[in-house]
Image 1 (tube, helix red, strand yellow):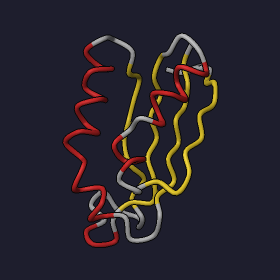
Image 2 (tube, helix red, strand yellow):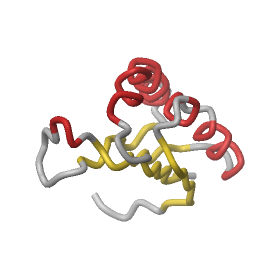
Image 3 (cartoon, helix red, strand yellow):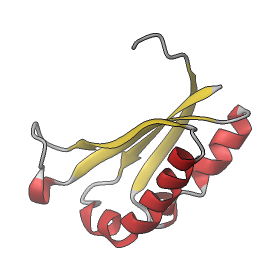
Length: 99
């Protein structure tokens, strides 16, 4: 089943994000390589593709897991959680309709 993982950043998270971004991306690439990643990306803190020093306000990951518990465990092990980037992470079942 698909799950949406939504991480909401703490204020001024950019430096912490950058410090563990390679590890964060490696985990996403592993999901992609397993054919389980639908999409992933950050929410710019301002209305623009490159937010610059404004950074990001959070992230969205949609991926396939065997259960809600497995999706939550994967989300809780994210390097952004350990580095204090996220103030909160929610994991919810997701039903893809389009495309």
